[in-house]
Image 1 (tube, rainbow, N blue to C red):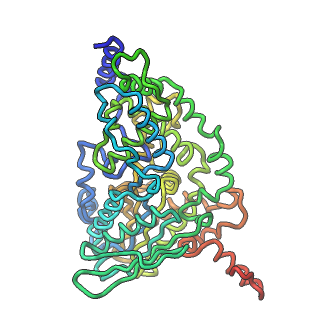
Image 2: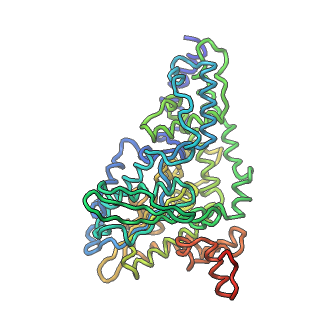
Image 3: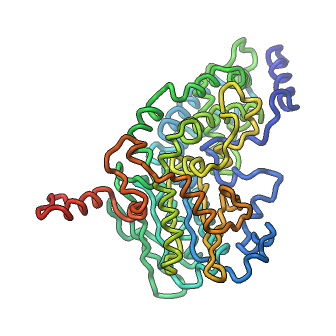
Length: 504
């Protein structure tokens, strides 16, 4: 064996036996699929199959729920598994072309047999069939978890909302398919700039049902794409290279550099005196493809390039960016999600007065979902995640591949109990969690309401974001689920003018 390769093997064996920070099973940051996100060797996946009564028994709270029944549910989803972005596809094709030109170590020569242009640019960012199937399964399971909400035929009393991105609308359609059941066939019957209509037919009957998926126009979605309209966030964080200095520092640090050098050495053909020619950006793309394909197919040949410790280092590098741009890195990252918190509050309040409003389902993005988790105070690490504290942060709470995989979601399940009392069960990726100061999983409604109200902090969104009059205020959050900002502006113009603008 060549001396350089013996050294690489020794390093790999040392890493596999725990030298360096001991950590959990690596994930793929935001490129993690839902099924991949659960911890292996646990019963987390089996727990998803429980109905609410089984959950109550398992957490020891069934006795206190005597006489309670589900009254409503509000769920915020991240879209399902998607195809890689156009940038990832282009870089992936370039890596494959370079491999086929230069060759690689015999151990990895199967990479040379990968079909060229395996992922068409035309499909970039769109929902993958595996993602559609995931959303169908989520729809099926929520119906099984809360059967009392689905005793009536059809989906009247439920509303569905995506964004202008087609993958969220397709995710909603998959979820609706799951709710309607295997007897249903739901297809898009009409589309407009702000809504898609599905017509669902059923094998056992001639009846058909129309289901609407709302979505705001680009630039007008303060509910699910608040980050695209928040000027101060865009200026201070999103377009500010200094905001991600910790990402850059870790990228130049010893842990990431070691992982990069190891992969480059592994790929070098026998007899080479230098590593295979690649960059750290290539390392990121290879890790992305490992994540995507693990979700699509259950495994990926690209994963074989990484030991668990090497993958953990790359994962931390990627998670640092999520932390500093969508998590706790800067307060504005999560404070700007307050319109969504207000909408959750408005929904739960409406359940008490409108028993026919059985559920509200939202379908957004990681940039929707991660700020929501942070504004609610979930998965906060102390100290903050930095380039310099990887050793203590490898077992961190903020792991995007665990908390915000594709198809990840947070649900607020409202229960009506005797004497008009209400309880709320919060499920994160179908597993029960406690929020705020709640001592019980089925928490008293007042405690959950208090925590959400404190989290929203009055939602001074315009002052926070440096905008003027975009957000209608706490009481107007529900309107953001139904109408575009243009409609809201027009309504105000009509109220104060006898000659409204023609666009209204």
